[in-house]
Amino acid sequence: MVSESDILALKARIEELEDRLKFVYRHLNLDFVDNHPDPMLSPQIQDALRRNNKIEAIKIYRELTGAGLAEAKQAIDKAEQFIK
Image (cartoon, rainbow, N blue to C red; front, side, top):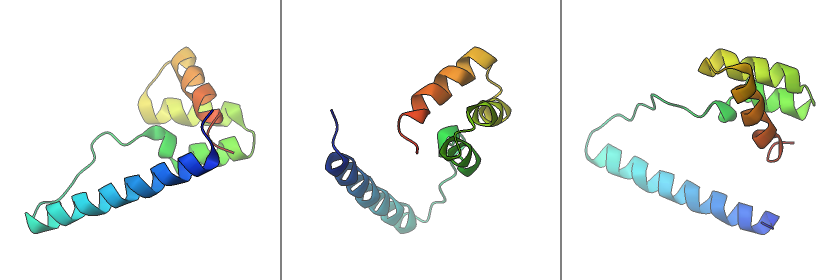
């Protein structure tokens, strides 16, 4: 089982790596464009899950991704474990 301290350590490491990557992009005078953002990071989906509104979260996921109902439900079921 992953502990909360493990998750916090991973988040800190991710932030550090993101900062380093931003530095490299600035140094090379490049702009980063994320063409495939993770729909689970959508504030609307996270908010719907925090309010225990799974149906709304599935609907939003489908709108963002074009996924079918079964695929969206499966994705939201997984995300539900981490958000709340």
